[in-house]
Length: 307
Image (cartoon, rainbow, N blue to C red; front, side):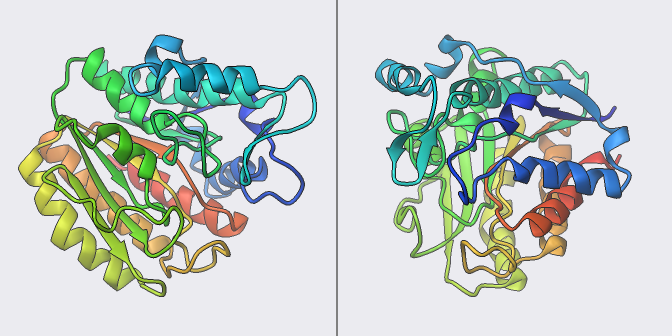
């Protein structure tokens, strides 16, 4: 049993303008570090297929999908908000980013791989049912979770999100669906200025103040996430794997490092081994300082690869 690595060349062609932090070089940084660490040859590599519209419509409105499709330019850039733009490759990249998570779900549920990492962009956890925002167009991890429920008949799906920003889109989509548990840590107050007052039995939000370090992060996971996950007994776990809480990341103010990402991945693996037959699908979200992103993602993937 191996770890799948799912991506697509068009994810390198989506670009939102010179100097934009959510850039194609992010995926190259991860691949380069995996090569340097000797991990990449051990991964089972797959090209992401495009998602089907019906899969998107499990979590997004018809109007939202049509709006993204109709906004796609033939040339140049079209801005959907001040941070989120489309070039001629964005639409295909967005469909294939979702498709990567669908494929990962099918591979893991079929027992073809132990777990999977989706090295994709654009990211997704800020996309709500009917709005693109925060570099995100479709909510990749939410579509995957909905696919696990609808296609594979699961009734307890967990999403854990350690991105530095609150996954407002994921919460928006699953707020009233107790089949999906969301466990999230995030810097607060900080973009998108949500989540601090939004917890419930299946929405476990843990805001962290700017400057919080790995010890504080680990305490939050141990105190809030792990008991909730054990009680929920997930049948599969998705990870919104944002690495922008790293102390070197210039877009935020938390102080994690690679050892913290190793630790939290180990905790998630323990829960998955106990309750979910080891099923984990990790989906790239943020992380903008390229060297830190590459090191952190490689360390995370290396834990996924352990038997």
